[in-house]
Length: 329
Image (tube, rainbow, N blue to C red; front, side, top):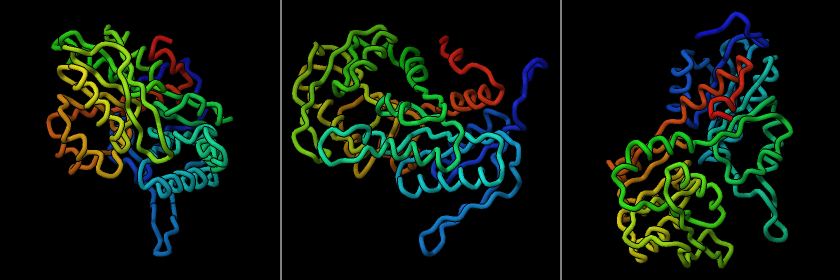
């Protein structure tokens, strides 16, 4: 660790804790920082209640809890909340919830009568449980930042993905075009397209009913005889991607690549993806992908790790240095 003498240390050392949701990512973050994950017990009792116990005191320390909130969502979220409270009650100086993938991100507004805004509830719970700060990646909607009253670093994995695409794929593409899977992702898609120096097209998708199924209709823009990079923030059931790939191919696309941040992969999503005429899938490790699921996609799957990004943000937060500087901001 390279500390400069003029840096003001506000807290004790960095203490890293991990829930059970993303052990590999937590381990990689610890390795990046040259730290060890602190020992703790997380027990699921026979009555389905969770119990957490720390092996050592965190009094006066700068503590980071690494826990993604993918499936099983309710258990992973409660685990996070109980860990935060445990640390608060043990008098940690500062507690940061590091949540690579934040659950309930799609429940961010009342888009119909008589529905909740669960994303706001989750933010409240994280605060009440004891977090002083939070860190998350590519939330489904930017306004989630407004649901928290505590400060946070809302990061994007786009730099990571853009670098990989530019180095590994971009040189071999013929007339590439970036296509966003729906209009909601249009703004972020446009930024991605300019970062890899390609034009953009959009899929207009109309949701017809309340279930997860959507109707993809038309591509706005030209993909004929071009290599297509489909971009989205997450793949959940894979329904939108299946439709998007089909539509791109019907519209004359050559190769198709699919790029997304969060591999949520609910139900039989991976089986559906494996059957598609897609050259490559590029994602990150914000949500763990089981060996079985990886095997189904085989060589076509590239998983970029967000560990160095999260590790660097933790280091900078601890040392009281700018996070924006990492992205020339």
